[in-house]
Image (cartoon, rainbow, N blue to C red; front, top):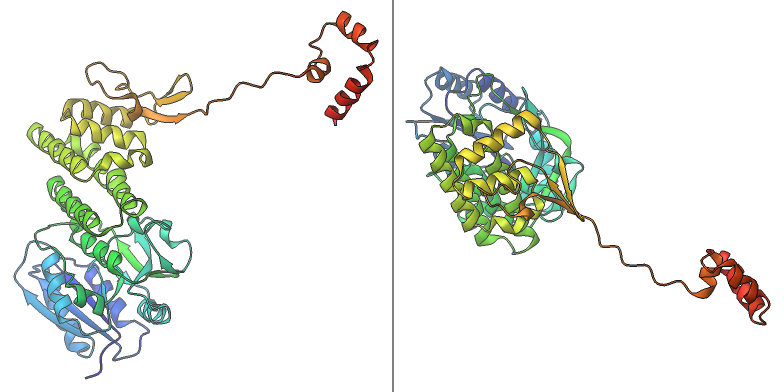
Length: 408
């Protein structure tokens, strides 16, 4: 049997009507027949998608292999089952809500073969307001890392992976996680890869935000998200190089993922859950050394983190409401230091360190060296009477010449 170039794994659970466009994008790929297979795992769908999958498999038996299983409770299980069935040289995970550009797989495989890549990041485009960080997509790149690119902001499994890399290291999605299981998988793959590349010149992957906000990440609880973030940071702690590489991954989670959970949605949680979230955030901060990257984070992010660490949900609520009402705070200048003037600054009840609010510190300007006599004359510091007396002195001409040279 001919080995396909790429296996696309699709985990499906109640994604109609978006599933139709997803499957059509696979049928419409420019990759030649036989070079592509799609393994689609239905995780107990009840919205008619299960029947649609069988229809596509019947119409395109050379392309689709469909598996039906009882609902597993999350995307990791069906993703792993599809991965176990993969036969291609490469594998790509495609969300059942999402779709591919017509030339996506042909271009990705060609790039991986040409560059010898273990992972290729395709250009991703958000649909229906889906937020997709674009920092890594400014240009094609044969080789990128966490210290020289925005790779830390592109950790979903929506990438082309060399299957041999996955098999050699036994990589799989953590089925204990209800959300973000793909991020720890992707991070480990990137840290173990010989080369990670970016194909930015073609819109390959369209990430769709469902109108009902039914995407699995949107439905996930705050504690479930925190568990996913903890799993990601554990992979970083185990495999990333200490220093810039590890700090880049820390800064992504503690500058974005965790603070996002301490925004407006936090106000909707009951008191008990708010305290639980604060405790869990505090554990993450302590366990993974988040304070080491506070200097990389916005003041608002590190302030919310520290209020959670202190288990002060009432102060955290006040901070969230202040940000929503006022946006950026005034700047408080104290000597050479400039601080974000949030109400929590120097609040005796909270006793937070000033450094938490520090925006910048002006450099210390060294005292000017004393002026020599020629400079003093030039600047008019020497009294006129003394200057008249000096002009009669034999050294005056030499001094005047020195001053004139100084003018030049």
